[in-house]
Image (cartoon, rainbow, N blue to C red; front, side):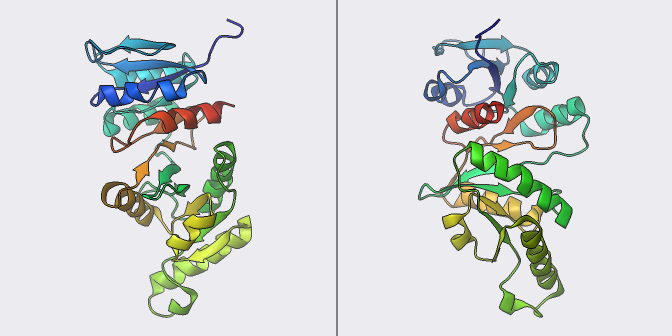
Length: 254
């Protein structure tokens, strides 16, 4: 229908009230379709432009509608990570997922971080591709386009360990190829000016994410999957709300 709102799906398992509470702040950008098990939203008042699809396997329904184009984008919400991401990989025909996370420090500084999956971003080629895709997301979300590439130490640490040396060399090459800045190991400085930060590898990126969100009073606002043809924003149950995850999905649609 001409002029109809695009629909973004969001999954709901636990914390239903928290998911629904974030939708009014997103109102007007797109319609929202909530995917959940039967009875999950019983007794909860829904905002305008919100519809509900109940299914015994809501993750399958969400991913299936995304793949079919029934919804324009999807947010995992509070659906289980393992089953939802497995369904997404199967539906999109990929053997792994590449994500770029939108994070917020305890002081309110937002930035994108990649890689955040332990099997992601291990090569120079993978890092340069994450930068290319991440800069586009940063621009759409109003973050600085400057990119900071981290390594396992300062330049003065060269010679202390082979893995440190390799991480520094790789970071310098990535910075030269992409026009990014090699920030050495100084993530505390990089976050002040960079909209996108590239960790040395997927393990360290995952540790940065988990330390900030689960130990450091920061927040994770969603992580777009960037190696599939549809828009899917992964999300954490530690999110204070899901407004920014929905905004991320909407921004990627524009």
